Image 1 (cartoon, helix red, strand yellow):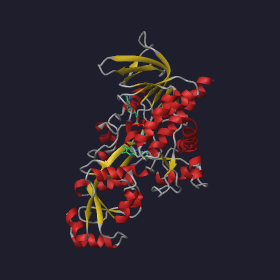
Image 2 (spheres, rainbow, N blue to C red):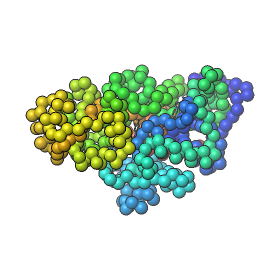
Image 3 (cartoon, protein in one colour):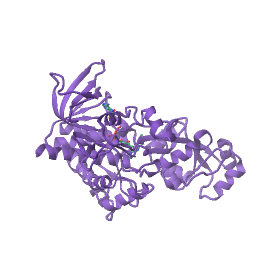
Image 4 (tube, helix red, strand yellow):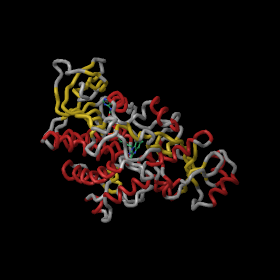
Length: 445
Ligand SMILES: Cc1cc2nc3c(=O)[nH]c(=O)nc-3n(C[C@H](O)[C@H](O)[C@H](O)COP(=O)(O)OP(=O)(O)OC[C@H]3O[C@@H](n4cnc5c(N)ncnc54)[C@H](O)[C@@H]3O)c2cc1C
């Protein structure tokens, strides 16, 4: 961070600079352009992808047109908020939960009606902790498709994207007002851009091993499945600025990361009756609790691995999901005609495994995938108010700094067991939506 009275002479000025062109930054840019405000998206990669493109692309939202068209008429922001708090043991920041759950429905409706992003409702099964079918997804059911659609919509709206632009420095004056940023270009040269307002949409710190070790020790040696650019920049700038940090021990883990292939295996199978057994052939946790806390449970097993075990009915369900088909294509799926063959595959005692399976509805022949626990993204970060303004340690908002998505604190409480499926993209889309509306309101005042 640079303390200065002014930006270097000649630095171009934009009304709004946005660090990061993932779901959060792109949503904000779409809204800002809709309000007639110029914005510059600064993206470190040659082509934006972020964790958004790695995700499954499922966005939870209540009371949308898509949800109603699918026959779900009794979902509300209050119900969704209650589900979030139930999963987070009541520890999610209540004002933020309310703001996000109220904003995400209108955001999805507007992205569909005004920006041509066509959502469908995922109504085959309920994700753990959701009391209504409210997962919205594109036809492709991938985060890559969501990312491509948001990027195209932002371009159509007239947002300017500067790729190959790694923001290295925040320039801040003596009153903690952001003056602009220093950007490292591919040739190593630092260029400067002045801005009236800065939005941090550069996600969390999952790609920063030191910060993970410090705040999420359970994941110290776990694979990180998110985008490598999630290097904790926002958190480190926030620290230097005296910003308040919150919920740093919260994260989205996933207990179904195929090894050694390193691909996601959908949790849908588990929700429909698949089980996880360890190398002894025993179950070791309540799989219906959620895939995030399952990550820690799997990591605590011998070798840090487990086997997802399912049957032909569930295999057919899995094949409806692109991530499962990808996992199968990498050779992660193993099959066994009977318990004895499955025990040989897992390397456990057949009698123990038979006893485990006796208490389930699973029938031979079996499918099995070896998995570990992975860190998907962090849910702690800069504390923000309900306008997505970054707060100082004393609770007062910084003059012109906003943060949203994975750069800010999330709505998952304080641990890894508080993550409700979809909280990541909820924070990204609703946060980007709210931040942009707050900035637009300020600009029109
Ligand atoms: C495998 C996987 C599956 C997931 N599935 C789901 C799901 O189904 N539903 C859900 O809700 N969530 C899911 N998540 C979480 C979700 O992907 C994230 O919460 C969400 O994408 C965060 O969006 P974002 O815009 O904040 O960050 P990102 O999409 O990561 O975008 C941040 C951008 O900022 C850029 N950037 C970072 N630092 C800088 C810098 N200093 N200068 C310039 N650019 C920078 C990055 O390159 C990146 O493009 C999943 C995550 C993973 C890893």
